Each structure stands twice: as structure tokens, then as C-alpha cells.
Amino acid sequence: MIRHTVVFTLKDQKTPLEAPDFFAAALKLAAIPGVQNFECLRQVGKKNKFDFGLSMEFASAALYETYNNHPDHVQFVQQYWLNEVDDFLEIDYEPLI
Image 1 (cartoon, one colour):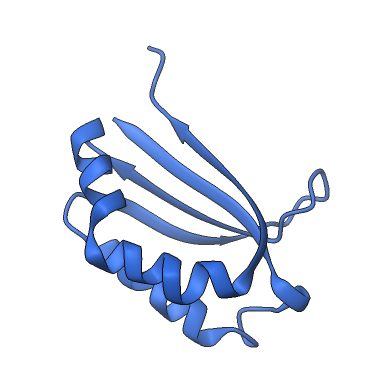
Image 2: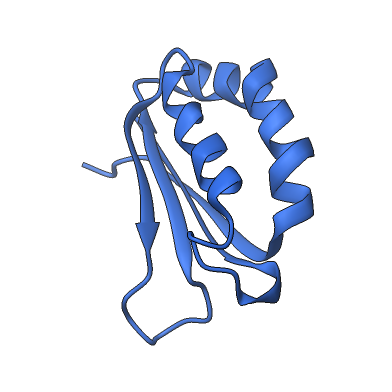
């Protein structure tokens, strides 16, 4: 299992209400085959600089790779991510035990 997580800030400190197209497009990523437990998240702690997160799981590394290359994901990155995200950190986990 792979848990893919990305935390980020939006340009100009935008909120979800100021960037509805971004979050609507992000939600569509949940429909890509292999995506499980998709979540759009808001940071509530003050221990880092990021405001939002996306988290999802994949049953295998192969499904995660398929997601990365899926046309809908590629389009989201090109149309929304590169234009709206100011800074981010991507973390991909697999269970130790």
C-alpha cells in the first residue's frame, strides 16, 4: 500500500472559497482508477507553513504509478497545480509493519 500525501499553500494566500475551481478539480482526482480514501484537507496546526493537503491511498506501487501518468492527473497538474500552488511538500509512505 502507498499513501500519497501532498501539503501545500496557494498563491496569494487563497482560501477554498477564493479557489473553488482548484478544489473542485482536485476532488475529481478521486475518480481515477486505483485511488482510495481520497481527502482534501485543511491544516489546523501551527507547526508548519502549509495550509492544505491532499491525501490518498493506492493498493500497490503500480496503481500509484498509473495514477501519476493518468491524463486527468497530468491535466490537473498542468492546469491547476502549476498555476495555483505557491509551495508544497510531497510525501509517499508505505507501511513498515
